[in-house]
Image 1 (tube, rainbow, N blue to C red):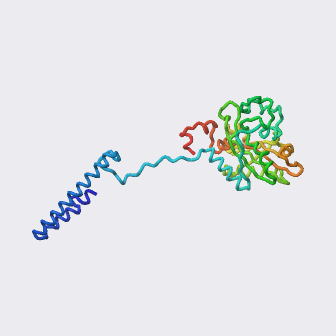
Image 2: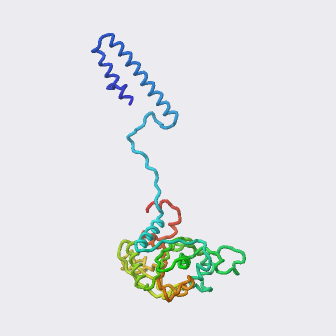
Image 3: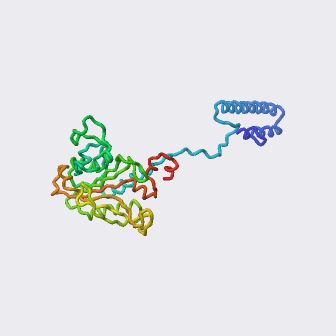
Length: 319
């Protein structure tokens, strides 16, 4: 701006050069006006420069207005949040409703209502984080508080309030009292899926889970079902998925078998329906539970679950 008016090729110089064509009186009059204008411009520039210097807005005598600005650091979603949202999106596209339940649960909904026997090892302190209460041992199941070990606890709560048919998923945090290592954490994310109607079979379950996994991993997925025992389903089975790392050819991830254990599932046990106030002769359905941390580890090929909870920005910035 200074050179535009005061420079050698500036506008004031141009005015001064034009004075030679004027009469002596006009030259003197306009020359004085130009000198006054020059002093005013110089004084304005001097005052403004002093203001910039005193305010600390600049460290040098000039500002390069053409220089690119500094980009602010922008946050992004945690990888587990991304996985949860993707899972919800896929299930919602298949007609499922996302529901929630309390993380501080009672023993009835976490164990009893799900047909888990009183002497089941999962109830012991090595697996369950009970909340300290007075005379806890003599309290009934609905009053014994604990940190939920599975979002399966939402099943009976929802069926008590909602008449089938229904399709729900319940993603959320769960807690286990166990030592942490590369594949275990005291706190992780769990997704429970429940579908109940008049005529629901294992074929419905297989179609749903295969569609979900194929969409989630963005590639075809082959399943293998093995008989297994879970108190809240009958029959129960475990689901293996063809290893996505080696495409079933055999590698260290799948221990050379070509298969990776993914989740437990089964047809809802009649006692679970009874505990929810439903007649098991009228309804049938399937339920399964899957660890969302395990899904994230498989999707991003991460070998240590603890990295998700480390708060290490070098790790988190990769997603």
